[in-house]
Image: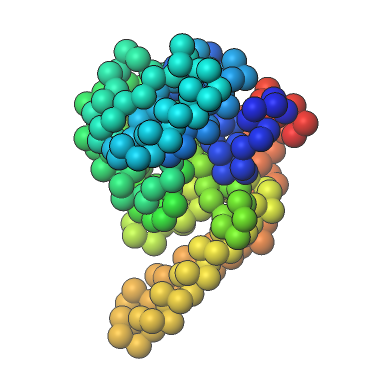
Amino acid sequence: MSSAVASLDARLRTIASFVRQGARLADIGCDHGYLVCALARDGWIKSGLACDVNEKPLGQARREIERQSLEDKIACRLGDGLSVVDEGEVDDIVIAGMGGETIAEILSSCKWKELAAKRFLLQPMTRAPFLRHWLCTHGFGIMAERACVCGDHAYTVMQVHYTGARCKLGEYDLYCYAGELTCDASMEAKRFLNRAVSALRKQESGIEKSDPVHVGALRRLVNKLVRVADGAGWHDAFAAAPGAGKPHPLFPGG
């Protein structure tokens, strides 16, 4: 494992694992700038943009960049979403640490989101099912997805690109809730999915008497998600996944 990336927390390390070597990276909502700084310090990325809509976190990122003497590799941009990034400046784009609806809004307003060569690395703090539904119904494909646990929280990270293929997904489609985590046989994925099951069961309990039509669909979804979380069919799917079992260059130890 590379030294700077190894010092990041589990959530940021998981995002880093999806960044392509030699990529020009934009980190939207960069907060302290730890991710882009670690990748630049390790020489994994060619260049970086630390972007934020608020001056305070961007100032923190700027100070971190200066502290690590990375001004020649990383620039700071103040602005909303991807409005401050030109298509020719970046290859990989991180949009992390915000709600799924906000991530969808940022992608929706991006004028060059349909360029297939771009890779969007998405980490929703909330509303992951909404984000998966939006992606699939707006021409985006989830290339890979991996769960992680950081402190008391479980997260998922998606590697996404535009394909133009629009899928029809219902509100209670299993893919909205499990995504490509059916190819992640880790305990982290199990924990993430089990939390989704718990949230759905609370929703089911709340509408059991008032909405019998929807409660049936919700119950079927819960049963399917429980089977996925318990590992039914998981290992076959994981073994067939592209690159399954191969260590990432940033994480040669597995």
